[in-house]
Length: 300
Image (cartoon, rainbow, N blue to C red; front, side, top):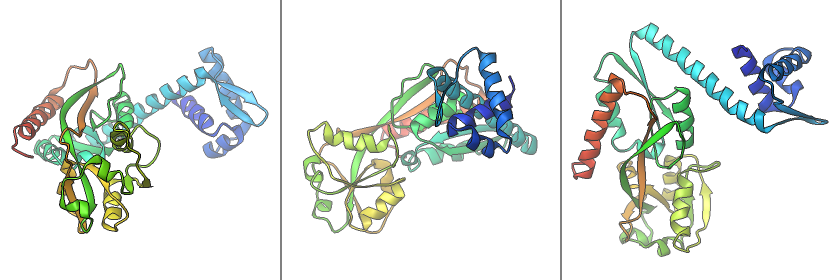
């Protein structure tokens, strides 16, 4: 089995149509059909159900697709890191993060890591679920997110629970007080990010649902910056982690909630069972110092 067989399989699995897959791969359809058949014979499992209007992944095919993508991601990450090391003579350390983490300690951590002239720090904006896959494939070495995800190959460390605050139009009456969740539920809600969960939007709406409150989600956007722009336009409010307060925005007022127990976790994700190398030990030392500063009030 060669890497090209995995790449061919992934494209066919994405298209579920041999003609379209062959066009994407710039090869003729008959050779592609043979390659897929040979792959199934080599594995000893049927990967696709053949149907009159196309293909359908079998359960075995779906599992193989997930594993093949991880293998290819690992190969791509290894090649990219090797090129960087060759060009710069540096060790690459890659960090994944969700955007709402980037307004607190993470920039300070990156700044301190970059003082080591033998390190090249690479940042990837990834949802927490994507970080888990990126850790397993080797694309990143450390991830920062907000969602608990159970995976046998990854461990998650709770760094701290961060208070949630309301971002309201500066002219709104609730911007002059500490609003309750019940009061906020009467205002249109802007959530982020858009797309399938689990994500921060699910956390936000869950805070209301667990209190028996219904909310009117007027808009779902890709990032916190866009959400705050819509708040400034008086379209509604959004809930954000406390550190987003550092992102000043004209027309937006950041207001603490009347319930200070409403928080969002900040989690660090690492590959399980690995002995930390020198770079990871340095990153862990810096991280735990920054977290201690946060927890003892020496913010950031």
